[in-house]
Image 1 (tube, one colour):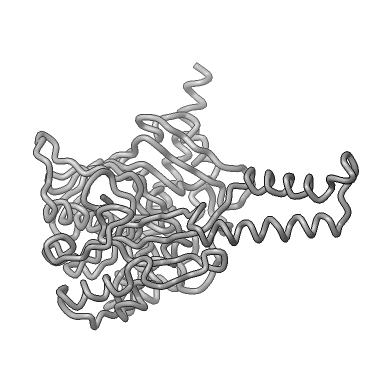
Image 2 (cartoon, rainbow, N blue to C red):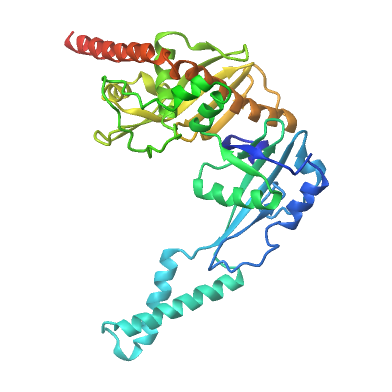
Length: 393
């Protein structure tokens, strides 16, 4: 379940404070103490949030053998909510009105009659909630990795992750920060005052012309550089197409990559709309090239990355660095991974993305980016000219 089998979907959070100590009995006791159902909650008023053992939706068994895997703690967070389908509530409303208006069949209900029927429906909802009916149970897998001081949450829903992390932080007294392009950029500059000064003075890049760029999905707040995720994907596109699909990384490893399966682009100025492309190689299609020549930026892209004999097929969300549908494989090998190897591959997924983004930041922060931008504009201009010539021929 979750991180131990199947494809991976996750958001990452850097653990910035953790006084809980080495994983052991105290962690397991905390999980058991705050397990789902340990606190009585009126689901009409608020959801019920609690821990699970991580095997299935009803698992509340926490043991070292199952939940502690090397330097990682694996478990689940279940969120129970009460939700009556709209068609059922409408049916109840109709039935209540029919009973109230039995003496005036065919007439129109008054405001008072509608209020009476609505109160009856609300009471029925309360009765159903008390019986445990219409309860929705959603489990999110969690991998707390002490080796990399990272919390992996198997969801890219901001609302869901707030509830999951709220429980974890309050139960264990830890603090976390989302690993986004902003966090990665700040970490990159942490010990370099000049790099930090350069970072705080950068603006969003206009790849089409030498003019200011307004990114509508960016809030423009100081020390928010999440738009760098869009520029990162654009840079990769240009780099892989004009230079080499193999890059050297800071840890002296190398990664090869390509765009694959899916690509979502959007106009940062909110003028020319969105473009969603599904294909074996989406960047090779004319509509993809037309979109970036019009100034659209990638917001989500399917990537195939190969590093250290591992292949990662994933979808990357540019602004959050959330990962979706990631499949990890070892080309040429068919052996399945054991639990510790599987978790190590999860770590390698995040590390590969971070190192690749660091290679981008080497160019983006400082004086190198002006030259890179010029080359990218020339590439876009060349693409336009080439396609016009091909069309004329």
